[in-house]
Amino acid sequence: MILEVKNLNTYYGNSHVLQDVSLYVHAGEVVALLGRNGVGKTTTLRSLMGLTPPKSGSIVFKDQEVLGRAPYEMAWLGLAYMPDDLRIFPDLTCEENLEIARRVSRHSGYWNKERIEELFPVLRERRKQKGANLSGGEKKMLSLGRALMANPEMILLDEPSEGLAPLVIRDLMSVIKEIRQKGLTILLADQNLKFCRRISYRGYILEKGQIVHQGQMEDIWQDEEVIKKYLAV
Ligand SMILES: Nc1ncnc2c1ncn2[C@@H]1O[C@H](COP(=O)(O)OP(=O)(O)OP(=O)(O)O)[C@@H](O)[C@H]1O
Ligand SMILES: [Mg+2]
Image (cartoon, rainbow, N blue to C red; front, side, top):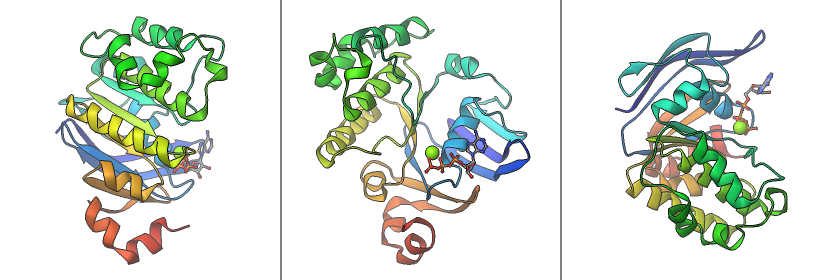
């Protein structure tokens, strides 16, 4: 087990957002976090990364209790995060955006600029373009590329498929499968059930800050009641 989360409670001010969230991820797994708008998917990922520190609970990452660690410490331990707002530097080129991610990382390994441009040929084509001039899909790829530049062991992806055209989603699926084959563990929050089913084996469903269902994606996919109750919009 690379990640084991128990009874996580996270607040924004007085608002008790995550309520006793528990989940686990095995090394090498791709696990989906599902649920409608505002149920706490982003808050869960931010809690794990240390960006929104939980008030109580336990987060064991690679056999260490990490609750209360700062985001940079989590990064040093091998956790990376692709935020939903992507955080691309608009005035830096595509290439410079990748370079910055490399410089702040403590880990070297398989992923470098060349390998990332191989994985996302569009980033090679757009190498000299400013971040601000990239399309939505290109920004997603760049943001994922930046997360990989840290050579993490596990990566948290917030809404990777959101706003992407079907063809771009297909590219993204094959990229995620390839990343996984290189040994990376992935926890992704996404509302696109079909996308999650194609790339992940297990999933958790959040509702009002609580895990209300978990299981194999194939079972969730076939469970009309669960879909209607927690996922359909
Ligand atoms: N910075 C914040 N301050 C106060 N409340 C917040 C803040 N961010 C999120 N919330 C609230 O916390 C709850 C969970 O939000 P969160 O963003 O984690 O949900 P989500 O599942 O990621 O939703 P989405 O599908 O919109 O991305 C929501 O009720 C939201 O309004
Ligand atoms: Mg969110």
